[in-house]
Amino acid sequence: MATAEQLQALIDKSNRIVFFGGAGVSTESGIPDFRSVDGLYNQKYDYPPEQILSHTFFERSTEEFYRFYRDKMLCLDKKPNAAHYKLAELERAGKLSAVVTQNIDGLHQAAGSRRVYELHGSVLRNYCRNCRKFYSAEYIKESEGVPRCECGGVIKPDVVLYEEGLDDSVVNGALNAIMQSDLLIIAGTSLTVYPAAGFVRYFRGDKIVLINRDATPFDRQADLVFRDKVGELLSKIEVK
Picture 1 (cartoon, rainbow, N blue to C red):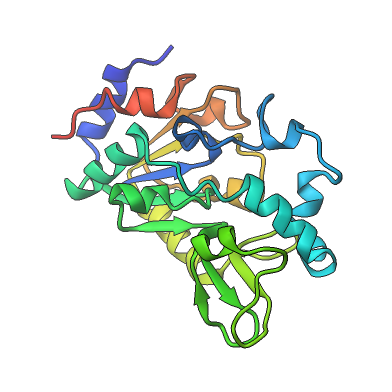
Picture 2 (picture 1 turned 180 degrees about the horizontal axis):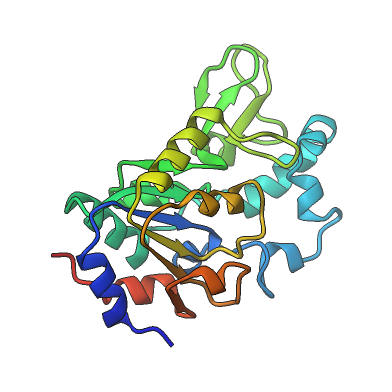
């Protein structure tokens, strides 16, 4: 099993680190992941979460979508954990060039990270579908039924739903960062959700580190594999 000392050595000699993270990065902040044994996908609702969080469901059953969304997706009281803070520290030190995340919670930015590519958007941004006026996550949380703009338009979260494509500018930025990196740290993701999981194939650098509590399809390609919690492991890293 890989050791924190081995990870420290790789980080020490790298200057263009990219961190690619999934739901497991935020579980230590109290935000449930989707596919673990106790995640959202294994809880019982009138509809499966994959269906509720789809573009079609949003269009046809907007009020039901928001009932689930407010209850399960808006974790506005959660705070960054040790992983988020360590990544921000690495960026300030000039070691980490970007965070690429599948998460929509905004915790990387809350911890101080500046260059963050949010592949699936963010619950913190919400826009009127008519006039594009911005609304906060707090506004959505406190609203009832279908949240509407003062112009009468329906407000939609800036979150990529199933059946929707990723934002081209975010994709291009993330891929460029990965292609230019010398160390890719993949953490808290099963690497089974595409197209995001396919991003790691663009890595042209030297070393890959994989941190995930379960096995992934990319374990054999990684130079170091950890089964630790992301925050617990990264908290052992010293930024030099």
